[in-house]
Amino acid sequence: MALTQSPQSSISTTQKIALVTGAGSGIGKTIALALLSNGYIVVLAGRRTEALRDTVVAAGGFGVNALSVVADVSDPASVKALFEKVRTEFGRLDLLVNNAGVFTPAVSLEDVEYANWKASVDINLTGAFLCTQEAFRIMKEQQPGGGRIINNGSISAHAPRPNSVAYTATKHAMTGLTKATSLDGRKYNIACGQIDIGNAATDMTERMEKGILQASGAIAVEPTMSVEHVGRAVLYMAGLPLEANVQFMTVMATNMPFVGRG
Image 1 (cartoon, one colour):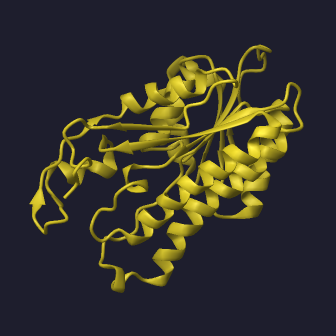
Image 2: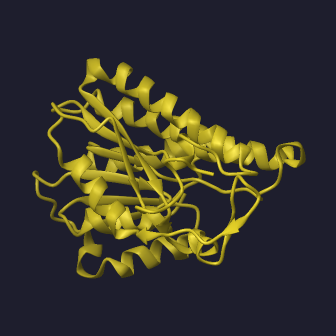
Image 3: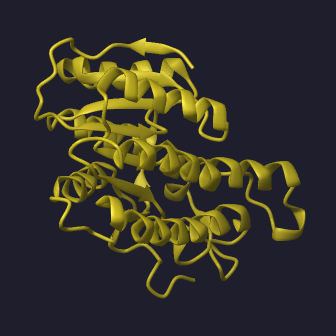
């Protein structure tokens, strides 16, 4: 773990502290930028120093409220060190966004390599669990107590794409993690919700604009939406008082094949 950017030295007692995993690119970067531009102090967590630095640069003047920490969510020791940095720097955590995830090669179920299955589980699911566990430990002890956790579920938490067993299984499991977190968090005033995102335009979805395999076996171009809509949706979820919670939200390209997928 390495500190790559320090937040401003003068922090308002009204500013909320957020941590976003996978904050160096794609949806995580967009969420982090949305939070920074709306007054949050944001801990940017990711595996690549350069990518995190790019997020800080993209934040412009709001970047003074960013703390970049290189961390691997699949490594328990790295996660512990990440949250200890949060505790040391700020003494509290108001919001955790479990966004870090990985897509492994698209192959039929019987051809999935064990290493790729394990990477999906370790990063997409175990990583979110480890971060949630550490967030609980901070949120239940801080004063005032409580906080919010938002999990990036995905449309794949509801319906699979062809040749995506590892990603689909972990995203279905994310829904179980969200529900269990909501239940176990009640006694600590910790709210947990899940945002399920469909076809937000990022580097990872460029292939959809060229054509992607459908359940019928056909290759079809799929509509996408601006990833900025995801940032605004997370801002809404995060901005609610802890007495209210968005349990599940789906934000998707209107005409993508989801309702009636395939």
